Image 1 (cartoon, rainbow, N blue to C red):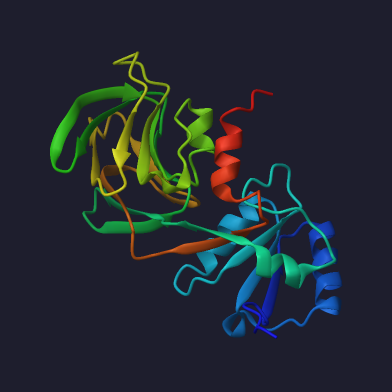
Image 2: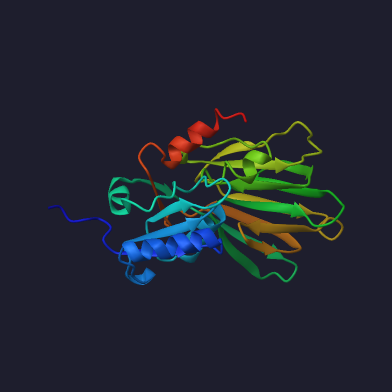
Amino acid sequence: MSQKKFSKIAFVSGDNPEAEQAVQALKQRYDNVPIDQADVLIALGGDGVMLQTLHATIENPLPIYGMNFGSIGFLMNEFKLENLIDRLEKAQESIIHPLKLIAHNGSGDPLKALAINEVSLFRQSHQAAKLQISIDGRVRMEELICDGVMVATPAGSTAYNFSAHGPILPVGAQLLALTPISPFRPRRWRGALLSNQAKVEVKVLESKKRPVNAVADHSEFQDIRRVEIAEMPDIALRLLFDPGHALDERIITEQFHYS
């Protein structure tokens, strides 16, 4: 018999009572080991739980198989108690790379964070933000007046980026989405598609009058002056999906979904 790829399983869940009950049922049926001894991590909850799990294991990435107990569960599989080992062995893997944010505030000390979905800049007050955008050291937009702007990964392109009318990106497209949030000038600018090797720099103009925050997933920094954003190709996060429901397929399906 061939050796199983995933014989040592660790389970985690969010604070959803149903997810917590499901974890206990899974632990009774399947062997459970500590995360540092596991071959695979099973995460029960919604997409928020998946993001938290990815961030918690980002220094030592494990293959993660999610089971949905949230509202959307775009990054999750259907929950079933039976045949878990068989599902894991047949699962298809999607690789995603996070973004690195380096933010500079008034103190001059660089503030660093990683984002799996997107890095966003938001106006901090009633005043619209004024931003200057450079790509690979070249200024591409002298002044964008807006509520903010974001850089989204393919995995995050269906989240806030899509709600802001940004494009949905296939996982293997090697692209990033640069998307404005409520642009006022230039009013008709809808953003840009960038190579995943692009280095993005955003400077905050009139920062004292028009303060801006920077957010990388769940990490937020206030009153920033400048940010640098780039993909981290050396960090590979591994998500497992049931056959026919891999992340690539879900992203394609989402583009033809109108409800």
